[in-house]
Image 1 (cartoon, rainbow, N blue to C red):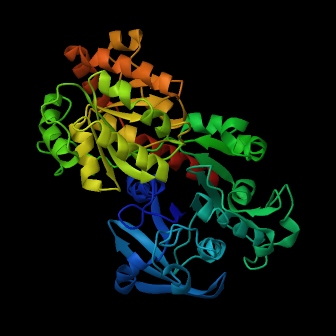
Image 2 (image 1 turned 60 degrees about the vertical axis):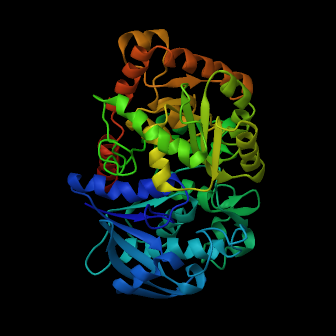
Image 3 (image 1 turned 90 degrees about the vertical axis):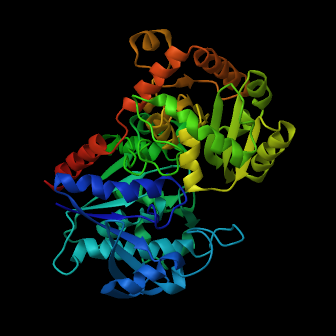
Length: 478
């Protein structure tokens, strides 16, 4: 079976979040199941060296925003189709924003071109290769199902995966013509969303199946609290909606052979984690002789992630005997809050604003617990990395966090299946209460190490999820 992946990010090539990790790992996980994937990705400026190594396999003179061509090349084991349209993608900045941090004003053209090029591959094939299913990811690719349906001729089935429904791709209705979309579909049951063109909304209406990245999040987004205004559309598509939990690349995230760690370890030797802790302390200016638990945060620093509430809980965390290591970037006021905390509690709190992949591995390897107090979390990956590294997750009961962490309640602890700490109240009081539970468990070394071993033995790879996607594709393609 052939599957065409369409996305704006892919790990090790272009990444701003978990979407890239999924797109980068899923094709390899599907290959043993007989599914051959090709991935359409924009040829951003950082990918131009790859463009030079590939071969042109198609050209389009009339994409939204101008001409473009597809260049086929293999990188990191992924069969890529890079959409080379320099006027749209060969520019500085992040995939969606300028160096000043503002959204590019032509993002509708940039990702409309990506979707239209992918739809044409779906309809016409490419050099004898034709997909049985087209799998679009998030709003940037969400017009693919629309273009497939609009062609009004035999087309492959489509899947749209929502990685975060908060990001929807809304643009003024006047761009409809620039994107070559049918004007008679611009209505509340089609592409129109409160007077705007909704990329994600259109994809939800026209995709053959809709998935999201955890079963709990699939239920949550049917409600006004989590649906971000699209809950009615999703309720109407309820029979086509399902949640498939994300996995992680267990080769890239392997504590037994991770070069970022001072010494490898596994579920039989969790005590070796401590040997990586001094390197974390040295990088962040933490007291290397501290005896209490080291908590870490590896995250976008945003309100969604609940990190405002955690920042307000730092005095209790320090008073309880803990240290906090923070790595991330995001909202300026939250960046400032954690930088100020490091200055107020020297040796107890360390903050690095930015992102460093190797240091993220080291923090997972050297920390005792990872705190993820998200107000909503479609899946989350850092708690899966934490499980893999025996860094016990402290998580809010939402989305994929609820689906992947087993709370250390009395029953789970007694039966040896607890893998972390789950709480409901994302507030300073709620976080302080769960931290008290963590401190108590940490004081019982036998219990703590039993939880670490249970966490490290939990399956967090792609095998089960890839099988679920394979079944979905097979059902669609018949």
